[in-house]
Image 1 (cartoon, helix red, strand yellow):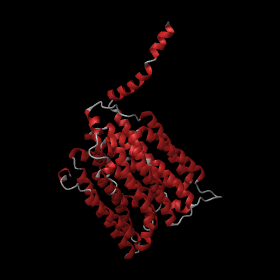
Image 2: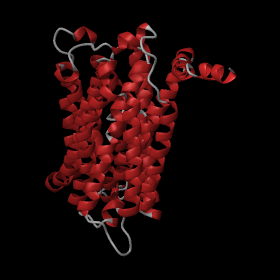
Image 3: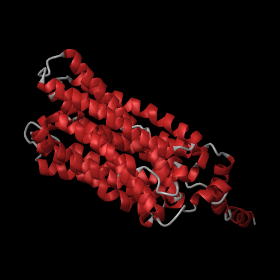
Length: 438
């Protein structure tokens, strides 16, 4: 009789565990901050990979015996991998759920980086060819493309309208945070080689995967008006919504100058400005820290003032001005002073940092505007579309810069960055008839 009673008592407890988890999420609404923390950690890990590896460009070039063109191809294929995979991962996120996609993609990225640490590193007896390195970086991008859309969708689901800009901007601080941490692997590459670089990045991804396994859950369905209304699309499906395409295109264009800083700033500071490892690392870290501060501030500011489009246009114009001044300083230094004035060199470094911050401070605001247009239930697709366009820039820019250097030197590179930011400005304007929301 006691065995029967125990059995009868045990049977309902499995479904009750699921209910308990859901109830716990309702009773503890602060769980959304854990979800946000996981999104930050996941994006920071992947950012440390796609920003940190380019930060070691000088050592990549020497360690793998690459020309500037081969270096650009290898770094470009890292971006191409993300560009090709972002939209499929985003569509899968909306169908399969952000938890499954994030765990699958981030865990696979950790495993792949370990493989690279073992097999795709220079040694005294063998130097991997550019084809092997480029293919390995392409696969890294294909796997890492899972992070952006899945983490963004989870934040849109857990946060209400009045907090989304702030939350998404905090998540987007993960990109400069990871980039800053990635910049710190530059000395690691110098001292210990690329086995240590890839191994450290793999360990970071593995830790982030374990945190997501523990804390990332779907929010309780229809528990409040905010979550149910947030899930409703604001218009047509994202891939058929002109407003979504418009914002995604502007995001992609404004990333061209940002990618130029992320991928070739270390080479510029080394080859043109004559800076050493310490100055290069500090400069790249300053760009990332400044971008983090600006992203958090901009998210809170635009949540309060509901002026996301205006802020995005302001960032575009500030970027135009900063890169134009940088190009002028470079041209003046190269043609008139032959790069021999120490104060002018310091001014060039400072302006590069300012330009990098200007062109990296808007992402959280833009992604919030995009996800709001799509609706939380379809945010994965919209964010995947935008990130596909963003990482087309990560593919094209590193390949284009060596050609621009041959044609018109570094001044032409930074002037081209200013032109891209200028083209993005009018695209951020809302369509005629909806200007009042700008």
